[in-house]
Image (tube, rainbow over all chains, first blue to last red; front, side):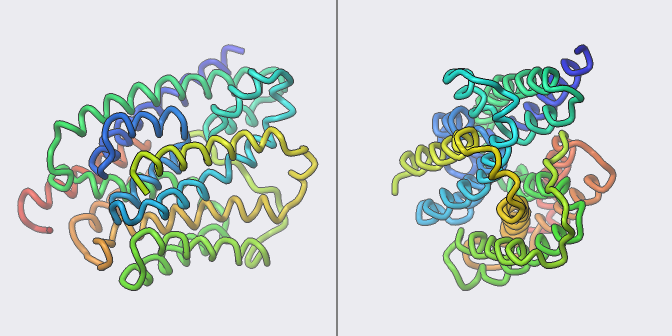
Length: 230
Length: 104
């Protein structure tokens, strides 16, 4: 029981810390402080949030439809997490609604690493609610900070955004199939950048995943793993 | 599309995806192909975003201070450093290279 609290709160604090970088980068990409906070409150899934501001920052207003599509596609994995958590969470409309909103990489990872359903449920709520509160507070702090920083390039915030995507990607590169898909998607996106409107190269690169995943090229027959907690 | 409508639309889609997971019957989880595609989709999107964010400048490819910064980030990830250390280090490398004028 104690272990679960420690693990859940540890993950919540570590994850919340980088809400600061999200807030600062979101403001640098052109969102205002309110829009930044709405993303963290309502969207509340780090990968999608970073994708939205990344595409918006690269392509501006014209790239907004691509920003929406990128965020939505990156949110698809939460659907799989929800299916996995659903039997553990139990019944009741409000409980399940709250659980759905805090279903993210971190809460699912802590939950499924517990030895019993009771501890899973506890770990899920501690991590999910902990990250939700912390992430939203640090997003606001980061957005206010980003507002007073000025030129984002002078602070290296464009490089920080690239590093943030790399850090989100890194724990998923454990199998050969994932590494090949990642490299191929990066090459496709870079090669298409001069030809397509900003935002679209990322969406086209996603086709690599659908094709490789459909035919299971280079894959083994095993259940996909949830990202481990950072 | 206004910025606000894009923010709200994207946020609602992401929230709805989470909720759908709780509405779909659990036995569909057994299906291997959708689960595999969902995992690889995440990898492909994040990798493409790394490429575009490190090399893209509008519709051009531009090698500047971001590239050495991302290489440093990769090295730190290899050494199992935390997310925050990696992101701050990348920002610092790019900012310093620009400050001393070694990279754009």
